Image (cartoon, rainbow, N blue to C red; front, side, top):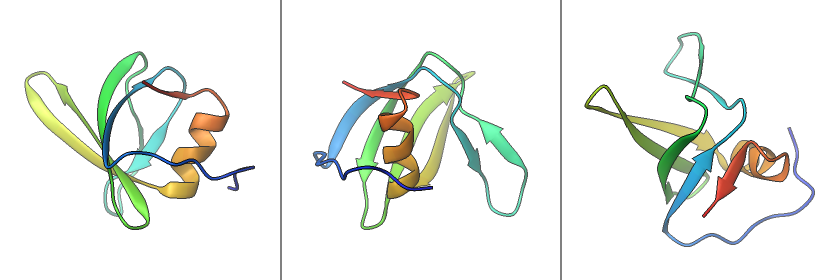
Length: 80
């Protein structure tokens, strides 16, 4: 997965997942972040930590920077 260009993001920001974005927890199956979900994003060295709440429970997943940027470039994630 590659991106056409690299984006500059602040350390913490808000985004909205509007298309199919999958993540893997540990060695488990791929899971899809719920569509039309507003998420909080924190930048890390080589990844982004994406957080939201489902049924009152916090959920945190990590997406590699190229993967996150791929979803932004393809309209699956909209950065606020």
